[in-house]
Image (cartoon, rainbow, N blue to C red):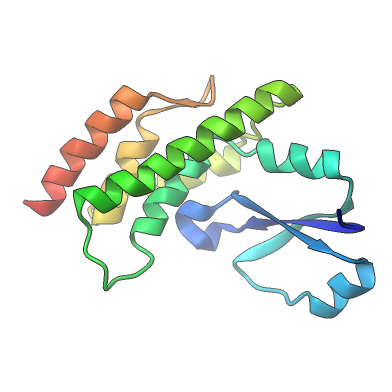
Length: 168
C-alpha cells in the first residue's frame, strides 16, 4: 500500500493511447515531486488520492481506449512487420483489458468518461489511408458510444477486412 498515489493520463499526442491511464505509487508527495519529470505524452490526472479513488479513475476510461491503444501498440516499432498472429495476440489482450475494466466499472457503478474531446480525437485517428488509420477505423466503427461497448463480431469482421486490404 502506498501513501501517495498518482494517476497519469496519456495525452492526445500519443495517438491511440490517448485517455488511457497509469497508476504510480510513491512513498509520499516529496518523493513524487523529486522523481516527477514532465513529459508531453503524459499528464498528471490526479495525485494524492485514495486506493478507492485510484480504482475509480483507472476503470472510468472508455472501452474504446483499450482498442485504440492496441492499434497504437501494433505500430510502435516500425521494424516489426504486421501479421495476423501478432494482431490477434494484441487484440486478445485488449479484449481482456476492456472486459476486466468494464466488469470493475460496473461493480463500482461507474460510467465511462466519454466527452466531445475524445469523440473528436477518435474521428481524427481514423482519417487517412495509412495502415494504422485503417485499423483505427476498423476498431472505432465497431464502437457504440451510447453503451460504451465494442461489438466483438463486428470488430473481428472489420479487422479481418482491413487486414486483408493492408497486406494485399
